[in-house]
Image (cartoon, rainbow, N blue to C red; front, side):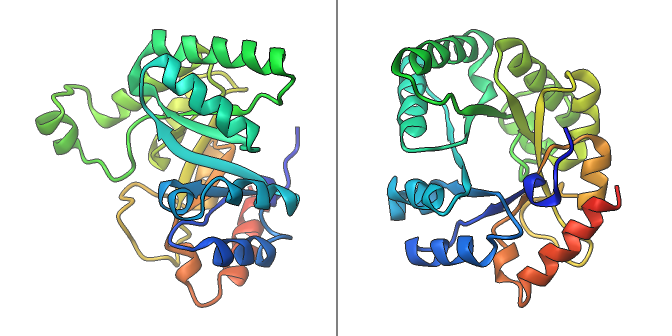
Length: 240
C-alpha cells in the first residue's frame, strides 16, 4: 500500500501544555496524520488530549511505554484504546510470554467489547542508551544492534504489530522481521543539530532502510520554521 508523506510522520507534542498541543495539531493538520503523546504531556493534560486530537481527525501514538505484569498492561492498553489511541507502546523487555499474553487478551477483549483494536508497538532499546550503559550497567552482553534485533524478533513472535527502534537499526530489523511488521524510528533531518537521541538518521535513509513511521522528536517544534521543515521532509520522503 502506497503511503503519502504525512502518513509516515509522527510529530511529538511533548514539552507542551494542552492548549499548545492542540494548536500544534491544527498547525500541522495538512502535514502530519499521527501525533505522539508521551508521558509528560499525558500527565499534564490527561486522557482528554487523546480524544481532542481524535476529534480533529488525527491519530494518536500514545507512547507511555507500558512495562508491568500482563494483567496490568492489558488493562492499560484497553483503557488507552477506549480513549482513542491508535498506536500504543509497551516494552519488549517484558519477554515473549508476557507480550503474547497481552496481545491475546487485548484481541479477545476488543472483540468482546466491540472496540477498535489499537496497534501495539514494542520499545526495544531506548535511543539515548549507549553500549556502555547496556553492558556495564544493565549486564546485557549483546551489542545494541543484536539486542534490538533480538527484542524485535521476540515482539514479532509474540504478535505485536511492530517496534520502535533506534534509527540506525531499521535496516537490520527489517531484514530479520516480516514486511508487514511495523517499524518506527526517530529521525533527524540533516539541518537539525544533535540532541539526546544519539542514533537518529535522515528521513530518506530511514525510509530506504525500511521504516514505516518517522518520529520527529521533541526538539522539532522548537525550530523557527517547523512547517517549512516538514515540507522539506515530505519532499525528501517522496524522493525515495
